[in-house]
Image (cartoon, rainbow, N blue to C red; front, side, top):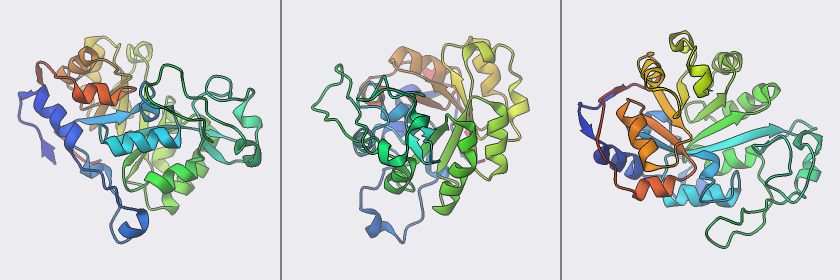
Length: 290
């Protein structure tokens, strides 16, 4: 168990989040004898790069995830997953290709061969010289980052859960990958499949949620930073060991949720948050690996 003595300055907590644990950069072949990085190695307060940090890199792209990993401003990499027509799992947030790629139409209509012809269009507002690239499959993401960083995979298609579980188990990453959903029934299924179950909730859902009901099967409660203080407080005191807030993109938002007791933030701007001074104190909370 890692316990933070209260009160702890937010500056100290953010320093822990940004600097530890150090993520290894050695090639996988050179690290074959090392055990995978697991959730037990995460710092007391965690930064997650949402879709790789989509205000700073092309979302759900291999180049963006690599940049987020190498910059070290987040300890968890978040990736959305969708299923193709042939059952292949791929990294994509939307149900269609329209917003982020050079194609249009449903993701689910494509075969793997057709997927390989798709190219991500980097957003015009992104800094840097990002090039168009092929979006990755989930297998490629797991093989590149699995065991080197903790991953957060959102199962956008509920019927993909068994395939996702098989991939995670086959790679020995059951303590290194959170599987996320907005649906309690899907989170329960993930738990029964031996996965780390994450459940995200909107501010509206949080008004009536009884969070303690999720405790037997949820490892990570992913809460909306826009929720009322009292709802965030109920989540923090639910007995679920990890309560992380989404999608936190400003220092003010971060400072508020940490003061209310959240022990992680999910952000599109991990670089901005990591280099921005913080104010106030964070409530001391025990963090126990579930």
